[in-house]
Image (tube, rainbow, N blue to C red):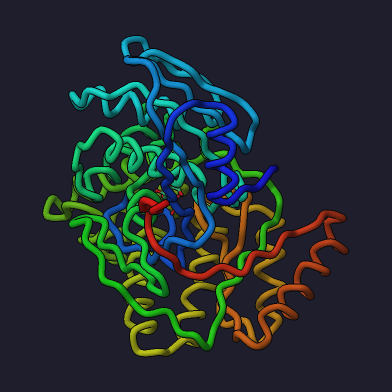
Length: 385
Ligand code: GLA
C-alpha cells in the first residue's frame, strides 16, 4: 500500500486538477475497551490516532464529482443526479455523497484527492477516516455548517447504506471528536463522551496480525442480529429492560433455556463487556493501569470464547503479550476476524517487547506481524495552508 502525507496529497491534486484546493485530515481510531458494544447500548473507550487520510478538495463543473484515491491509484467519477453503489473503497465515497443529497443538501461540483498513512483492513477504521475526511471537506466546501455529531451520524448512515456494514457510532464519533492525548469514554446511548488523559508512563502498541479483516463479509452484521435476537428474548420476560445496559447476568441466566446457546454466549459477553468498560474508565481515571490491563485481557477472552470474533493469529499475539510483565493488557481491537491487537506496554520497554512478540509470531506463523506505536490525536479538521 502506498502511504502519503498531506503535502503529497495537495501535490497530487495540483498534478491532476485545475484551480485551488483546500486540505482536510480525518484520523483512524483505536479502542482501549468496549468492543462490539457501541451498537449494544454500552460504553466504549476509543481515541483518534495521528494516522489517517488527507483530502484535497476543489471546484469542478456543476453537478459533477471526481475523486482520485492516491492509495489505490484509482478514480471514482459521477454525477449527483445518478449515484449508485459500486465496490470497495468507492462505496465509502459514494455513500457519503449520497447521504448529503439524501438529506437535501445541494452540493457544488468538486474534485478531490485522498490518501494517507493508515493501514487498510487492520481494524483501525480506515472506513470511518475515509467517510469523515470527505464529509468534513464537503461540509466546509458547501458552507453547510453541520455539527460534528451530525457529520458522524451522516457517515454512519453512509456505511449502513452503501458498503452495508451495520456499524455502531464509535468509529465515526472518534474520528470526529478525538483529541490529542485523550481517550474518549463514550456513552453510546446519549452519544456524549468524557475525556480521560492518557498516561505518559505507558505506550499504546498495535500489532497487526496481517490477517485482513473484512467487515462486509457477514460476520459483523450477523453478530448484530444475534444481539438483537438475544435482547428481545430477555425483554419478553423482563419488559423493563430497554437495552443491554439495563440487563443483568441474573436476568440472562433466567432466560438461558429460551435461547440458543450461541445467542446466550453473545449476550453474556455484551453484559460483561459493558460492565468492564465502566470499570475500565474508573481505573484509567484513577491511574490503575494494572487493573485496566486485566480488563483488556478479560475482554479478549470474551471476544474469543463468547462473541467469537477472534482468530488463531490474534489469540497467539495476545497470549505472547501476556508472557511479558511490561505488557499491562492486550486484546484484539475493532471488529475482529483479523487485524490488530492493542497492547498497553510500559513506555521504556514498549519497542523491545513488541519486537519480541512479533518475532515469535514470525516463527510460529511464518508470516510478519507489523508493529505501530500510536498515540491519541485530534479529530477531523481543516489544515490551513
Ligand atoms: C467496527 C464498527 C464499530 C464497532 C467495532 C467493534 O469498527 O465500525 O462500530 O462496532 O467494529 O467494536
